[in-house]
Length: 177
Ligand SMILES: CC(C)(COP(=O)(O)OP(=O)(O)OC[C@H]1O[C@@H](n2cnc3c(N)ncnc32)[C@H](O)[C@@H]1OP(=O)(O)O)[C@@H](O)C(=O)NCCC(=O)NCCS
Image (cartoon, rainbow, N blue to C red):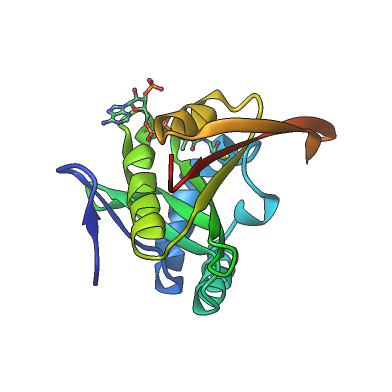
């Protein structure tokens, strides 16, 4: 089983359907914190929902598409990072991330995303990695900036949440940057 140390207390591992119960328990701690910022299908309410999210990612990964990885802090699943899109033919990908509130502020997601970027650029020949976030998601934009991404533009009113439309930023870094 592979795991990548992020700090002396945290590690990154593939997040798989067998983690459904752990993922559901984590989602109970994270749900309201992440709900405004991530896709609605990701915000599940029980173990079956959690399992179906993880199965969906397993199927994407089997087709060399999206992939999801968990961040464990002191052996507790506290969040994760993912390729929300991975397109080998186009040599492009998009990253995403989330944390439960207690795990913020330690650089875990920035470190974990660097692992994904190293693999994408170094092993998979990806040329362009994107990051999409709501324009008012300052913590998410700060991660993109820390990863060396550039703000390329704003998709106006592209994100509907709770009856309101929000702008979305597109950040990206190229292999040549
Ligand atoms: C987006 C989100 C994952 C960012 O979490 P985060 O903890 O701010 O990001 P990181 O894990 O990279 O940690 C960065 C913080 O740790 C600090 N830090 C400590 N050591 C660090 C290190 N070695 N490297 C980088 N940052 C470090 C940074 O200063 C920063 O803290 P600050 O914002 O108080 O200055 C989190 O806010 C979240 O889950 N939000 C809700 C869901 C969401 O928005 N997902 C993204 C959708 S686009």
